[in-house]
Image (cartoon, rainbow, N blue to C red; front, side, top):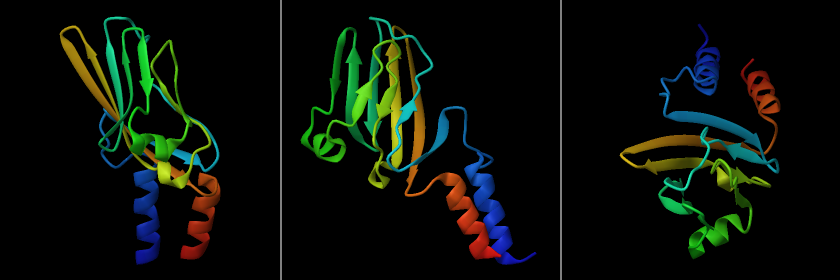
Length: 141
């Protein structure tokens, strides 16, 4: 098999989630300029603490009724009012995405007696993902 074709196949499998990504990790692909919602899949309640991190930087926190987004300068500079929180679910919404928004977004939910983490690996592309794949395959052939 041609090494270029094999490399393309491996990349497609990684993109489609056959990479061994566990139940606590999700790959998300978005076109630059679009919005994306990272879903908690819960209904937030007052007993929970929800924290969102971009790589290792805390970017949002919900403690009961208190909601705070980008309280640190690093976060404010990077996202500049482009982060929103869904008040019912605690889901994180990134509007007007940029390629610099690519990275790992970690959701930490702490409830009485339990704790859960989920990682969203976000990739922001300057073109639609379909266009990206089509261009990539044409280059390989």
